[in-house]
Image (cartoon, rainbow, N blue to C red):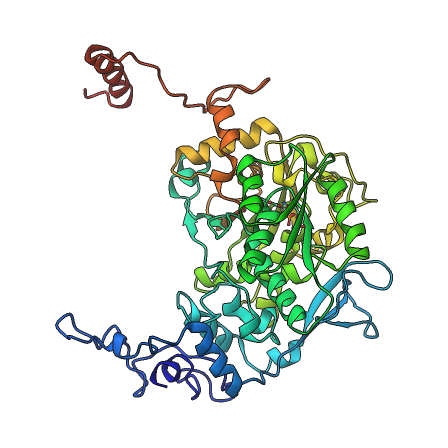
Length: 527
Ligand SMILES: Cc1ncc(COP(=O)(O)O)c(C=O)c1O
Ligand SMILES: N[C@@H](CCOP(=O)(O)O)C(=O)O
């Protein structure tokens, strides 16, 4: 097939070092150096009745999944593998589980981690992986068009592409926060990784595509998985229900009643999930789903399940890729159940171990002061961890007092020379409003991360020229009520200093002209 041979070239990368073998299943970038795969854009002209890129199009009755299926039947042995091991700096070599087992905890009751066969991955050097990942960005090739599955060999190497449930998530915008950086922080190398500009509006899509794909595989293997369930503060449930709906798998979500935004609540409802609104907080829901999934054939979709983090870690790899594999100095991540901070660490760490970069950034985990168990733990010098009762916060998705991934987060922070910061309600709402006033439209959790940045910048820990990435975890449109409250100055004990309420004006030309002149004068002294 002309189309598949250009997408899945079977010859080695022309530009890669000859000492390393090149697996035949990997696609290559169309390159001017290749006589068989001319650059489709360069070789077509606007006068050509049938441009070259159309001549190379797959036949009309073939879709991208069929194309991948045909390809995998000829190249089904990749040689890479992964398994569950107890989460530990030195995992016991005697305890491990296949990813096809349904297991969330180690024998001792501790967390699990997905361990890749690093020796197999190391058979290819850093340049190789960089070229491979770069060659897949922005394509429609199944499943590599996804920012997660473009790193498939590092995520779930053994899954059949046909079992993958993907919305081509990832590849999210790394936004240069030019005005926010200059105006509020005196910084010119500040970036916001918009993980929330995504299929269901949060970074959870990155992990959920992996988890639901594995569930799809398990169900095809006739494993006892009738449905998939989670406890949620609103984003995990949205992602779970969307991915399950797209694969026709039942989803069950436990939501803390009256503690998530309306936009988040409507997502699983619209996607056909079985939604339980439970009169408790997130920690209560988490406890319940753990008990329920131990009894019923419901697969656990929270980040306690280490599969999720395999997808989430690709956001870290993507950041490096977007900087042409240069390492930023700082990455700031808002933390709740604390899976994501470890996922970022793991992504950066893998890139260093496999030779794509030579160091990792310093990580900052940012918490709401109203739900700050990690911050308190950090401030105590990592003494005994104590769960807290999480209080209401505008950053409602991180209103979590007993995070399941506490051990993973501590490990990530200790190994990245990391820092934990906190944000009061006023600080996080002001930061969100300031960011919005420079053209963003962020969620309150991103406001928490920006507050951490502001504090670390003011104290001089983060320097004016440090390249810094703030991870934005959800879309601001999910949290409009918090913005309405702020801009209406409708929040007790909060000055709402950056509120921008609409002006009521009567419907006559004179009144409208008066207010407009006043406004323009305030903006431009030349008028
Ligand atoms: C929008 C948003 N930001 C941040 C977080 C925190 O992520 P994690 O629980 O992995 O720490 C969550 C969920 O917990 C979230 O939904
Ligand atoms: N913010 C999360 C809380 C649960 O986190 P998880 O990563 O363990 O699923 C949510 O949106 O539910």
